[in-house]
Length: 139
Image (tube, rainbow, N blue to C red; front, side, top):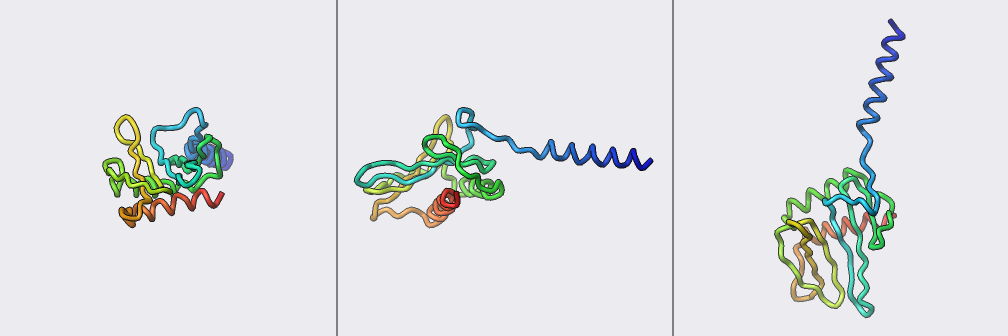
């Protein structure tokens, strides 16, 4: 009887481990749900861009995988995007240097960009951006 219980317990643990495995994406096979963000402009006009997936994976503009964020933190960022309704927001006020967030909207992406001194971005969007950038800085 003990052997049956031990076998059942091991089977249960193994089953849980299999179901807890999270999908890992490759640069060639990214899901549609992404948050793209970064900074650009200035003298060179170069843009630094990053992509966050809902499982916490992070990629740079060259599609090189960076150190992942915690899945819970990534889910919070996606939830904030929904709460702020960024997919419906039309805010394009880049300055010489600018920051941006892109989110899925319809068949493409909606870009929110800011940097112009005369058009400050909403503080909640700025806070989301800082949180996203902190994920990259940890890597």
